[in-house]
Image (cartoon, rainbow, N blue to C red):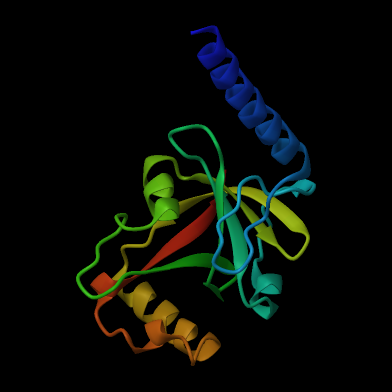
Length: 166
């Protein structure tokens, strides 16, 4: 029994140590691999997100129910100085299911965005205006013409979330 307690204690200590190290160093997502904390100096959300258009993707950090941040690379578009996050689903898929980051945002809309070397604390809300959606979808198709999601036709397959100030 004492050996078991020592082994469990050592495992718990290693996990805590790993989380402390990752909390200090961060762990940005890389390609399709999710990350944890995004590191950098946080600045206020800009009024004009137009500068972001030159970047192909951005990183977002969401808050999980188990208190360890979850970060991913995602597609996005800008329109009229606003920033919109893109969430896609296979035909028949529905927001927020199927993706950890969308489920996290549905539960807690506060998130951290990293564009280039800049970090912003913001919140995201699901877009529900069909006319605005149509404009954003066209912007998405122009920005990502080779994306398989550019061929999706139904609104239920693609979602956009508007980024707002906290």
